[in-house]
Length: 346
Image 1 (cartoon, helix red, strand yellow):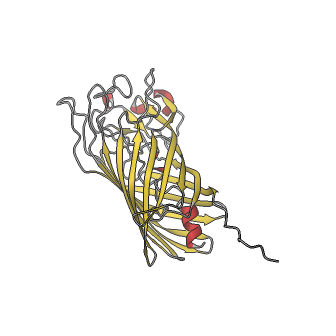
Image 2: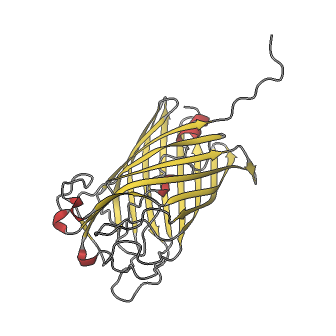
Image 3: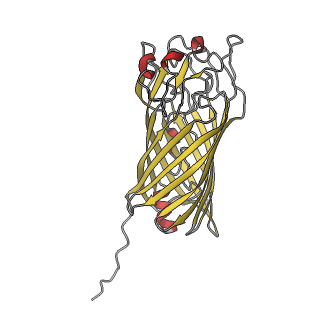
């Protein structure tokens, strides 16, 4: 695949699918999240694709080998939580061909959907399957949910030459997703705004796609009562600490195939604020995972599949050894037509 084609298809959502439901679901009421760790693996976000309109579909199969107890009092009574089994995100990226400050300009929006499930007791979750999809996990509640929308009005990408690209910009997540419902069901959608500063660096050649995608999230205060009735801490206006995300890949391309190692991390860099003295509902979280990716270029559509295994977890729903599987299809919806010659040839 040529570098330009790789940019056009593999880099379709240049800000990304991060608007998916959080895999962290952080076992603390102060840290509901908008961004899904490892969701931008495979995307060379340092480089915008050529002018056009791009879209695709990313699906995350979030693993949970067994029900995991809350590490604090995030869920009343030490209840267990199973992660959303499946999350889907549809990005829309527009690159108009404009330039600003020497950079290519783009804008994007991402809408995600997912299924979240609450296990009311350990017994209803302890026999969880490979992705937590055992026959009992829905006994505590579960619903298909529209996630908060991710807007990226400013994406700037600089071509530094020699295959190096860097990008930055501004993203925000609006609290417009599905809110909690009655009957014990709820959603982990934040009820507050998140402002995000992205930064990415990519090294792209005919043989390699090596990229580090970083995102720094700054959250506003929760309005309280966003989720399930009885959720400990829900009445409090807690402000989640800032979060740093990093997704990494080094892919080797040969023919229509690409393959290589991947990794992801998530670290809370500041403490939650506005937490009540008792019960304790605020903790710092973190996680890291390693894995691999395989991709294939079908021509008009690019397919990537990658797997991550959690190797470190702190106050995080996914314990060490949890496996997540992602798939991504990317394609261009529209591109400007080639200019016509001024004089027709005889």
